[in-house]
Length: 285
Image 1: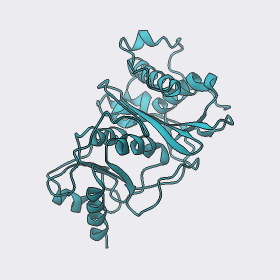
Image 2: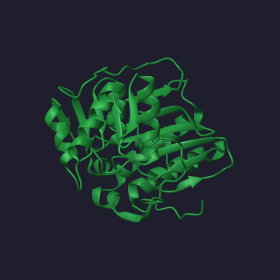
Image 3: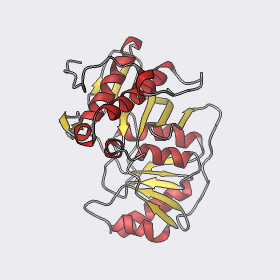
């Protein structure tokens, strides 16, 4: 990929210098996911040590989806691309789009999910990645950049996490993307839920649904999610007994078209997802 780097003050990326405790991931994690995670975490921590919020959030170009790319996004993505290049896999990311190396295996990543939080020092941002083999998601990992926790799952493998199993929206703990043009669905869900949060990181929210912390997370109709935002969630949440669906019933299928959008509903159970979808759509009629 021909793209000039946008470094902070020139320095050799020595992970130990910037992050004393590198991600200690289990042996079961695929080498591609492991390399990408370590690269992303190291790059983000280095960047935040060397620059302030204004420099990190500054727009340095446009991503493949046409939205602005921040310096922090660029630094993290460049570090990942460099780390996995020797492994010969394809990469799908919001900034560079699809990098085709002719491999059956594609690494699907959001280098920094919750960029605004990460740049400001708010501890609600994550690296998230998934592996797709011939278009089928097989493995995923989300790493909390500040908390140091990680969530990993393989499709068809043993389940290390379980959702809450909640089946109704009434009394649920829900996180949502902030309302944009139409707030009716957001308000309808909030009226029925016991607690509502706006955390600013879809990756963390989905991981917490899988881990049984949240009952559901969703975009109430703004079509904010790209495939890179939902790929890891599909693997993690389904392995834990939950579901990930689109508000309008669109298939969350593998695609290299980074401009495609969804309004994902991540829920602890299929009945809960149905209840959330029904609530939002009825409010928007």
